[in-house]
Image (cartoon, rainbow, N blue to C red; front, side, top):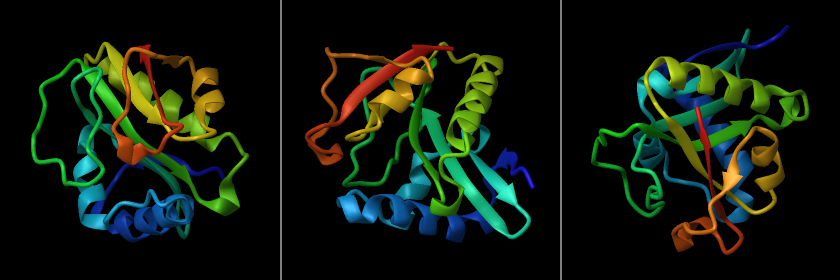
Length: 160
């Protein structure tokens, strides 16, 4: 069964938190669930729904270009921006290597264009840069991500 892309709902949060922890806890980058909830806009955040839960998620929010959320605190400002920041994309271990991450990115880019965004930005964690470059994102060497993202983190952007 191919997972369905749909907007995040309240019932998805236990699955999102579990996938987030399985992806980032071992790297010391897992966020508090209450803080993670502040990293999304309902209009630009999605899950891959399966019959019994979710296979992955993507959280994005309007955010000024050249800036990234501080991982140590909740996001309490709603930004009016033509840049959409893709804060997190994670796929459940059992569903990885099936093209689902790229599918979520394509979906986001189409929705972002329709909603009037001009660019999408993100911080690629260590080892993920190749995936993001394959999705059309380009390194921005003039932007240094906050230290909380790790020493090898890279800031990338692409036009919508």
